[in-house]
Length: 250
Image (cartoon, rainbow, N blue to C red):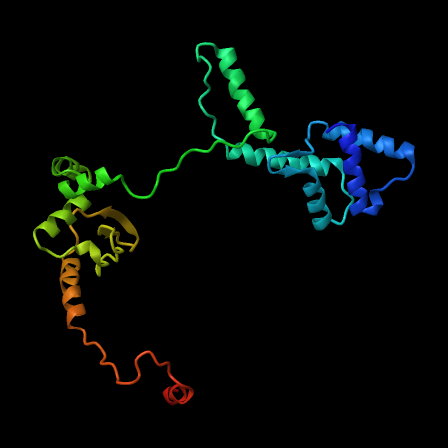
């Protein structure tokens, strides 16, 4: 901002906060010079920036008189926010001409920082694969081809064991928690060893789940299928319980 814009800004500050207004011409000139010394590189308006908005925000949130450093700090925060949302585009200058290439790169950053240009963001991926990719996945039947899956089996034995059990028609043991080692659903069983003092001496993952986990996985679907469902009472579906019914339960 130049001296004229600083004078306009100080008049607006005095309008919002009369404590900063000065009627003496000499004091007003000194104040303009002081503010210009700090805010010379801060524009009056830019893309998404208005120095009057910074003054209003300070007046609303602080009971102290506004200082030029308060405006400068808000301007620095504005610059940081724009540069954090900016991704440098590839300069069109010849990369072999390093001074020209760096000059264009720094010029783009400077334009974004001062509000002369909008930040350039990366294009994010859209949700879901391309239709051609979806058609290929349907034809293959899996994201990983069978040959690649067989090669990866030694490096992920837990996943390979679950896939083999599913292909053989066996229950998925990892779909339920283990009643023996208390492994959570989806995690492999652990080979826990304790010493004579009762302290744990080992906690090695098992390649094969505990037998009780297989039994629990096999019994879980049958138990869910055999569980009786409460018969709905005619005329009470979707009707909340009334006060007397609740008191009767108590």
